[in-house]
Length: 333
Image (tube, rainbow, N blue to C red; front, side):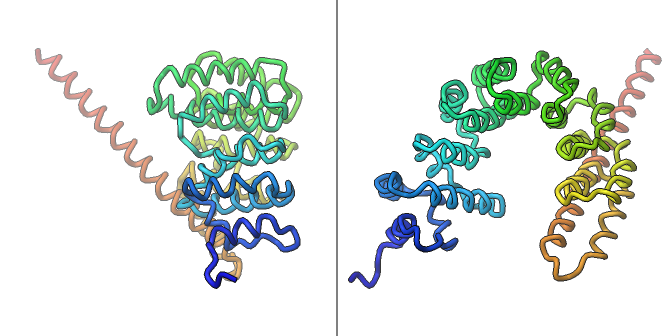
């Protein structure tokens, strides 16, 4: 027996052993995998049970949210052709933050051809990254246009509603004029799922034309609509939403919505938001480490927001001063 087995062989053995739970200590082996490891994994992957695959993918997704230093992109790319649709969808979720433009044709192929609606929906969501990068001029304009064209086609098509809604949400980042009408028509639907997706798109748009619709949705009886409106209020930095959010949080029973309200307040900024979050932090039990960490992060984000507001105000005042000077010079001349 080899006293010093290959560490990655232990990972492979654990994947194939359904009698024991997969140890979290193996998860880091999936980050930045080399060619030899990918080849070894590929040789056994088809023999891994679907249940074990999904368990590992779920753990990797959670780890990626906690630790920004890990990257499971190469692993996720290697399993995109898995026979199980749920596994393919989970692999796509692991790639949500990837900015690799080589993935664009893959995502479009998924969106147009995969047999599973959830996998198609995940592909639509992933394409939103390249809409954002296109708006920032960090990808070629032809890629941005291709992605937007495919998403518009999906959003306006006859596919499963999940696919069309994810396409709408991804298009929220786009400045294409067609998107405004798409968001407006989706928001007017009676279906809360469509309203929630429209609100997510509004929040991503950086367009204050939606402020009234967002504010009107903050107290919606539907939990998903309410959370989407809360998130949009923060993303759009709607100052008028602050007193409404502070009132809503007193009666909110859903922890996720409460968390969204706190974070949105940190994005909007202001002394009222600061006092509220600081008071929450003071009242939080020392043993509740996760809540303390979240509130401290919210305060840091609020400080960043307030600094940006001061910087923007300084720029406005400077511009006004220069405008005034130019006007005086014109009068003198």
